[in-house]
Image (cartoon, rainbow, N blue to C red; front, side, top):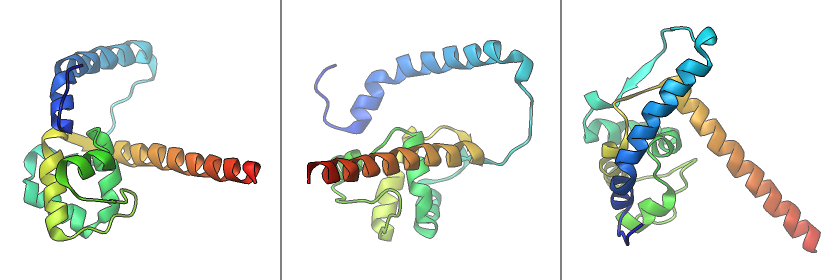
Length: 147
């Protein structure tokens, strides 16, 4: 991979391959689980229908939504810090000014899919939260072991 300066550069460099894989994964899932697939109605957030300001207001009003949103578009706190200069963002319980929320919303909006189901976002958040808590616990255990 060439030398890139921003997260957007990295995303652009793998976009076509990732889109191709997405199609392959969807087809593989439909084939593998054909007998277990059901169509259901669920709440869907339509990101393509909202502006950056709509997204910023949502993040500002409910900061807990930040982690599943950035996870869904493969953005991490490191990229926010490096590319936007917003330091020490706690992505699990963020405290953001309206300007920071707007900057982050503008940054991640191009990476968001057209829509996502609410249960998918909450599951994504749960996966990242569990991973964080397990790593935190392992870090404490390692510290106790060294003492």
